Each structure stands twice: as structure tokens, then as C-alpha cells.
Amino acid sequence: MVMHERWTQLLEILSERGRVDVGAAAELLGVSQATVRRDMEELAQQQLLTRTRGGAVLSGVAYDLPLRYKAARQADEKHRIAKAAAELVPPGAVVGLNGGTTTSEVARELATRADLADHARGPALTIVTNAINIANELAVRSYVKTVVTGGVARPNSYELTGPLATMVLQGISLDYAIVGVNAVDPKLGAATQDEGEASANRAMAERAGKVIVVADSTKLGKRAFALVCRVTEISVLITDKAAPGELVERFTNQGVEVLCV
Image 1: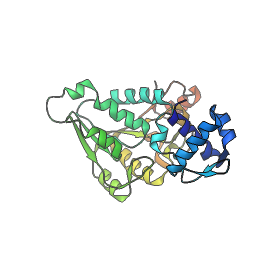
Image 2: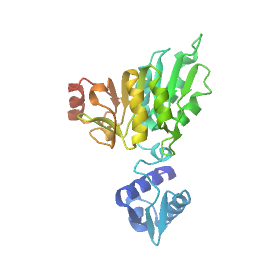
Image 3: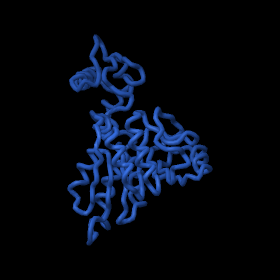
Image 4: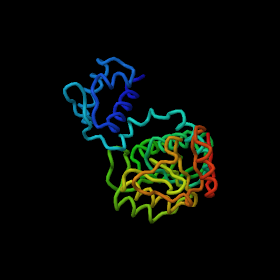
């Protein structure tokens, strides 16, 4: 197990338990106690946990883990989901992208599409995003017009939130909104843990002709704190092949096109 995968799992254990000792963490991660101690020291220096005698406690770790520690989770599934989402976007479209590991992958897939790079006149694509990491990656692509909302940056997701972000999004029109979420339930819809992110993401979804939700199967049937959009507002849900058939059927019964890739 590579370092960042260990860190991600260690932070998840702390999120669930609140505290863990070195021995228990070593057993759960399948590594030596010396390795766990080094990992805990490193994460403590980043103020993501607090060291205690013999272990660590939760400190400053939000329920929604920082984006850099999520990247290794369901990585293959997220890549396939992102590729499928990018293939749905025709040249010349105006696309909204919120923050997150899967939407960051979507941005990379769009940025490297050969048909867009070969576009002769004007921007091949217009991307509107409230995620500063996505804007940073796309800004160097001359064939992509990158529009960034204002707002206050959240360190966990790199998303810009608040009234400035919402105001900009409410004044534009999108062909597609490709939205990553923390949870998507066939009854309650798509949601995220932070109400500020949800507000900006909701504004993006409301301004789109088609809403595409990208979520790996671990997020299906789950609930999160703040609503992004109702299930009837989702045009396409792209998930992975591990999605339970019963859940997929419940989404399709609500009129959602589900792609399991």
C-alpha cells in the first residue's frame, strides 16, 4: 500500500472512530507499527490529526476529507466515469464543472480530447467552474475558454463558494452541468456535506440544459447534509459496474438515464 493510500485510510478510520491507537491502526492497515507512527507524525504536522500517547485523535479533519487524500479512492472507477462523461460533451458546448476528484478527472479528459485540440476557430469548449484546481489545469489550454466564478475557496475541495459564486452562476446559461457529489439517493436526489458547496452546485445545475451526475457506486443510495438537485432534475447518472441493480432500477424508474461503466 502506497503512502497516500495509507494516509487516506488512516484519516477515514479516524473519521469513523474519533481516535485510534497505533496497534489497532497497524492491524487495520496491514503495516508495521513503525510505519503507522511515521504516518501519524506526518499527518500531525499537516494538522490533520493530533498525536496522543500511543495513537491519535481526530483534530481538524472534516467529515469531507481533503481532496488530495480522496484521489486514490475508487481511482479506476472514477477514471472510467470521467471518460464516459467527457464523451457526452460535443465540441462548442458550454459546460459547468464543480469541484471534486471525479470532476477533476472529467476536466482532464475534456482537455486531452483530440477533436477539441484540433478545433480550428474559436474555443472548442467553454468550461465554467468554481474549482480553482480545475481552472488551473484548463487555463493553459488555448482551445478551452475557462470561466471561473468568484467566491471563498474551501481548502478541502478547492471549490469557490458563497454569494459571489452563486451570483455569477445565476447569470449564465450552460448546456451541461457535470456535477460530482458526496451522495445520490433515488428518493432524495444528489447531495453534498457542505451547504456552501451545495448552494453553488445547485445554482450550476439550475442553469444547465442537462445535468450529469458523476458518482462511483459507493455513493449510491447514500444521503448527505445539503441538497444539490432532486433526482427528477438529473438527466444522466454515470457510475461504475458495481452499482447494485436494484438501485439502478430505482433511478431509471424516476426517468434518470444510468450509465454503468
